[in-house]
Amino acid sequence: MKPMKEYTFWFVVGSQHLYGPEVLETVAARAEEMAKALDASPNIPCRVVYKDTVKTPDEITRVMKEANYDDNCAGVITWMHTFSPSKMWIRGFDLLQKPYCHFHTQYNRNIPNEEIDMDFMNLNQAAHGDREHGFIGARLRMARKIVVGYWQDADVQEQLGSWMRSAVAAAVSRNLRVVRFGDNMRQVAVTEGDKVEVQHKLGWQVNTWPVGQLVDEINKVTEAEVDALMKEYEEKYTIATDNIEAVRYQAKEEIAMERILEREGAGAYSNTFEDLYGMEQLPGLASQRLMEKGYGYGGEGDWKVSAMTHIVKAMTEGPPGGTAFMEDYTYDLEPGKELSLGAHMLEVCPSVAADKPRIEVHPLGIGNRKDPARLVFEGHPGKAIVVSLIDMGGRLRMIVQDVEAVKPIYEMPNLPVARIMWKAMPDLRTGAHAWILAGGAHHTVFSYAATAQMMEDFAEIMGIEFVHITKDTTIEGLKKELFLSDLAWKLK
Ligand code: MN
Image (cartoon, rainbow, N blue to C red; front, side, top):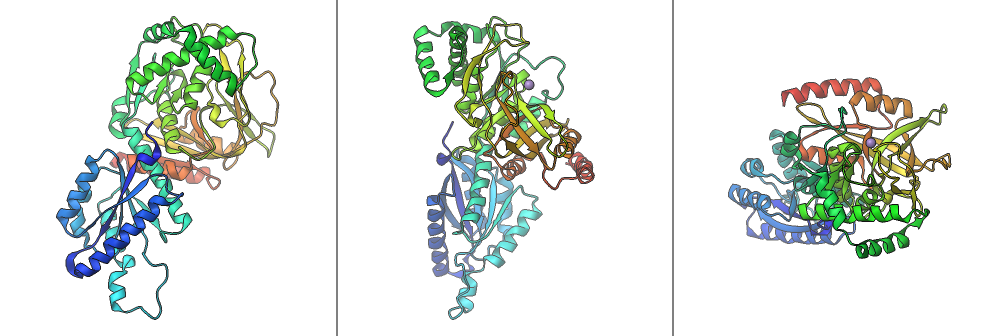
C-alpha cells in the first residue's frame, strides 16, 4: 500500500494578465507560502505543492492535463486570489479526471483598517474571484469539494485533510485488484453485483482464482516459515489453546494467501465456506491477520465489502481507531437501551480490539472442515460508522450509518468470536428500519477511524449515490429522499 504521504495535491491559483506582473508575482509568492504551510501542517495527511498561477485558457488546460497524467497527483485544489474569468477554465475542467477541491480562503485574515485602499482590494479579492470560480463549477455540474475558511485555522485544514483522504481513497479504488477464492455463497442476493459497472465507476478489477491454486500454495509453505510466524503470534496475541496444529495451519494459510495477493498486486480478497476444496480449515486467524495488515476481506464471496474494507483502511492510514469487516448478527431489545451485536463467524479485524486478542480454537458449524483458529476479542467503545455498498441495478448506492460502540454489556463466555456492541443512530428501531428501507447489507465496513464526511466525499468523487443515516434521520424523510434519488438516478 502506497503511504498516504506519497500522494501529492496540486495547489493551482487562478488569475489573469489584467493585473500586471507585480501583482501576479505577489500572488505566486503568497500561493507558494500557503502551499508550503499546508504541506508542513500536521492536519494535512498528504503533500501539497504549489503548481502554478494560471492566467490563460491554455495554461489552465495544460495544468489539468498534467494533473491527469501524473500518477502521484491525487487531486487539484484551486483558489482565486484575484479574479480569473471562468470561461477560461471550461476546457481544463472538462478534461480534469482527478478529484477537485475549491478552497475558498484568503491570504490575510483581517481587513487592514488603515492600509486598505483600491490596490489592496484589487489584490485581495477571493470573495469576488471565488464566486466567479464557484459559478463555473456549478454550471459544469462538477463533482467538487468546497472548503471555506482561513488557511491557517486548524479546523479548515482538517476539512481539507479529510477530503484529501477521500481523494486518496479514490486513487486506491481506481487501482484496486480483488482476488476471489471461489464464488459468492449460493443464492445470496446482496453480495452479487455488476463487476463491469463497478470497474467502470470505481476502478476495481474483480477476478477469480481457483481454490486449488491456493491449496497448492498452502502446501508449499515450509515449517520454518510457520515457526517464524508463530513467534509473531506469540508476541502479539495470547495463545489460549492447546491445539497448536490448528494455529499452525492458519499460519500456512496466511502466508499462502498473502503470497497470491502480492503476486497479483491485490489489496483485497474474498472466500466462501462453500468452497474450501482441499483446505483443512476456513481461514479465520489468517484472514484477521491479513486485514490487520491492510488487506480487505469479505466473507461468503462478498467482494464489494472486501474492496470497501481495503479502501476505508487506506483512507484512514495514520489516526487510531481501526476498521473491520463486520456483520450485523443479533440484537438486545431492552426498551430504551437497544443494542446491536456485530461479529462474524471468524473474521473480524483485530485493529478494532480493546485489549490483546486471544487465539482460540473452536468447532465451526458450517463449512464441514476442521476446527479453525481465530482471534477473539471485544471492540472498544467510541463513535464509529458502518458502511455498505449495494448494487441497485444501474447504479451503486453507498449507505453509511452513524453508530456508537459501547463496552459489551454481557461477557458472553461461550461466544467463540470477536464481537462489537453498538447503538445505531438515531436509535436501534429507527436505524434498523432506515437501513432496511435503503437496502443496506448485513455485511458492512465498521470503522472508528473513518467519518461519514470522508465517505460522502468519496461517493461524490466516484459519482455514486450516498445515503447517510444520522441521529436526525426520520423514516418519513428518508422515504422521500430515496424516492427522489431513484428519480434523479434514472435521469443520469
Ligand atoms: Mn457473513
